[in-house]
Length: 92
Ligand SMILES: [Zn+2]
Image (cartoon, rainbow, N blue to C red; front, side, top):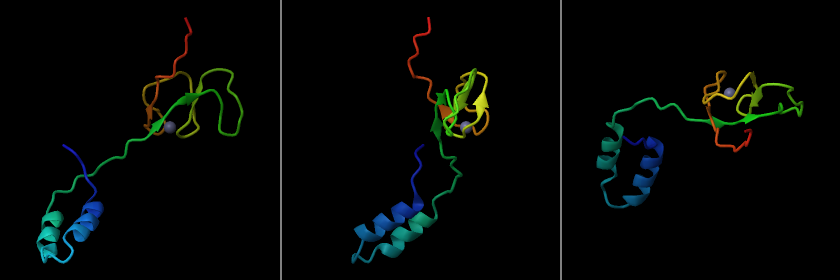
């Protein structure tokens, strides 16, 4: 399933159908589409310092909400952001 923005479709449809006389039909089609609640996905990454510039001696700080965590996790435990773990750190 893909999600689209009703307002965006509405606007585009109004533009595309301008002068054709089909706007009312198009509108009713748009308006009867089922609504689901979409939770926006947001991303962050684990960094070594707070936004204020203060470095942490241990653990990591999330770039999404500036909260400290003891280790890098896939999701931010504070705000639920998906954390980008692909940062290469060759700590072998
Ligand atoms: Zn967060």
